[in-house]
Image: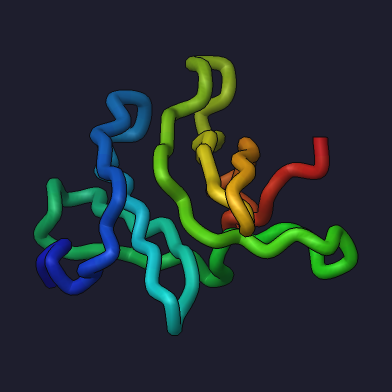
Amino acid sequence: MALSKWPGNHHALYDARSGRIYATSNDSWFGCEVVWSSDLGTSWTTAKQNPAFPEDSGQKLERIWHIEPGRDSEPQVLYAGVALPPCSVAMMRPDLGRDLKPDAT
C-alpha cells in the first residue's frame, strides 16, 4: 500500500531510533491520523485510535502539521505539532506504545 492512499499527508519522517517511517494524514471526513511503516514504505500500519484531545477538554484536533521523534531516552514517543480551530496551535505527545493518545502533560 503506497503512502499516496493518504492524500492529506502533511509530514513524513524517518525515525532512526526505530527504523520506521512515520507520516501524518489529515482528512476532513476521517480526521487526523498517524501511520507508520517498518519496511521502508512497502506496507503501512494505522493506529488503533486516531490522535485526539480528551473529550472533556473542549479542544478539537484540526490537523497534524509536523511530527518529530522524541529523545533517545523516549524510544516510544513521537511529538506532534497540531492545529486547533480557529487558528491556534498546540503540541501533542502521543506515546506510540499506547495507541497514540495525547499526553495530558
